[in-house]
Image (cartoon, rainbow, N blue to C red; front, side, top):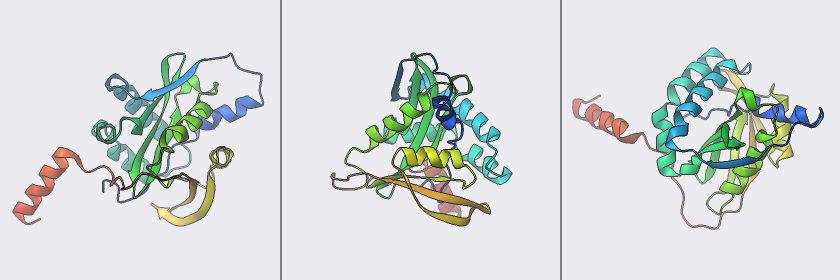
Length: 215
């Protein structure tokens, strides 16, 4: 498996749309989703690095590890497994957010979900929540799940609104911080399982070389 540790999705910016529900109605926009295209990946990666930096809920160790792990190469490997594992959220035809996920032992793990700053006063985030479950509740998975910091109460409320239940709180789970486990059941009917995303060609080469030199 590529992920020996489980890391939370960066869902806080996506939840700004909830506040807009109680404010003056925003202008109407046309929302859509698509599997991210090659031309989208550079923008999505830059925005991902920025949202990791700006989040108030994660410690410095977590942020550094996530930024080193979530490389452009990893995004491409996820898409080679299933193009929809990097989902672009569009507002009036412009990429304004993304959801990154991956298969984990018969479930789909929501790694990161966020809206780009200039689109946070729209309802794009809520459209993305619905689109993700519509895409992945496709018979291949038992459930979707993610980790959220317990202090991120707005994210927890948003996930519950869209059918996710808090299973437990894992103490000192990732670099000494607590994480709530949120899950939504799907209906699996397709036989067999996705076994996750491997380390890629360079990772396999490095592993082979390490074996040859006895490391």
